Image (tube, rainbow, N blue to C red; front, top):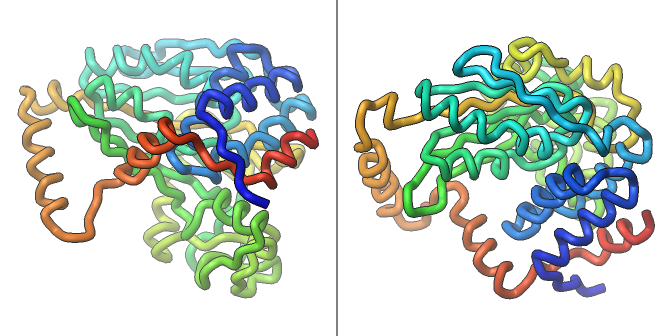
Length: 333
């Protein structure tokens, strides 16, 4: 069956309407729909409409409060805490982002711990507006045990993605977003849905045996990228998104989760840096652009996010091809 071409606005309407049907109010549904739409628009299908049934599952189970109102509290001049009160993370982020930006512009660096949220999306959308405000930024979030620590045999870490963004005045920011596992769990889920094998070295089955079957990996565990190096970065994410902000580690999130197919309740860690205050002048931008030019001088290179922005320009003009499989699943809700 051929993919269906949908406009970006139509994708947003589908996501928002579906979420509201299952108990999210306009503010909560709109924030999540924004994130889903950005993913589809920019070619990140594993975090777009593919995730909508999972969002719905948490509304149906009552795990997520679809009418929550996040609260923003200044713990220190450079520390802005957002308590989502059990909402989806995009709504909490939207509530606190302006305060984070203001604090970083004033203090030079600011941290925004987000607690009591359910994160289920890509991380780069969380940073784009922060970078557009002229700030560098970093974000990370844990999940449920999906990744084996280096040398171990049992999943303990989440896929624990990290994202870093660099502002480029007059241009789209450079933002990379990557799981600390060899492959994001969402990409494994897409492969399982579409019946595609996974490359060797991505994960193991429930008995710890290497496999290329995405369905068996989803029952088993993923491997950290780069062996002990990726494993250590994943551990860092657990500490920043757990102990640092008073939230759960991935294994603790799993204990209290009801396994409804949606995101667990946990925390997210974001910090922003004002390069003008840190450096003492505005020369950072020109200096960085010279560095990026050096990267581009080599054939075959690109900056993280380049393909995303190319997809964005294309899809805003031509629409997005959406899998009929996921559309049928959404219709079946």
